[in-house]
Image 1 (cartoon, rainbow, N blue to C red):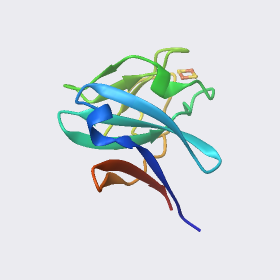
Image 2 (image 1 turned 135 degrees about the horizontal axis):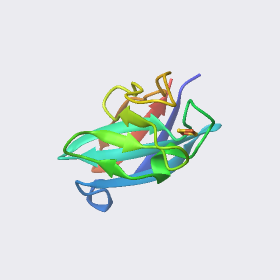
Image 3 (image 1 turned 135 degrees about the vertical axis):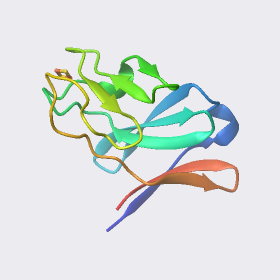
Image 4 (image 1 turned 180 degrees about the vertical axis):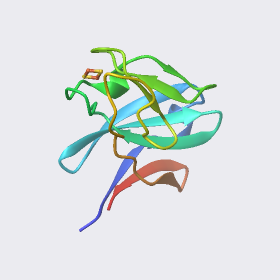
Length: 105
Ligand code: FES
């Protein structure tokens, strides 16, 4: 069963920011990079670090795990650098009635 969660009004997630929300049983980071929205699971595949609480670069579209520094592609979840080598999950995210919504299918 899919779970759809309202993240926040779109104007509360301006470009260059991230919001961390609970979607069912998991935690997701929703990024606005230059007006494009992306959602990644907030759990590093290396050692379960809080990935979306770390630094990120919207121009390169890279999120950096705050625990050991692995870098992930925000657009695909792909692990770009060790110590992580497995992608994190990504989720559909969009805008409905001026609100950001994310879906855990
Ligand atoms: S937990 Fe993320 S790099 Fe180790």
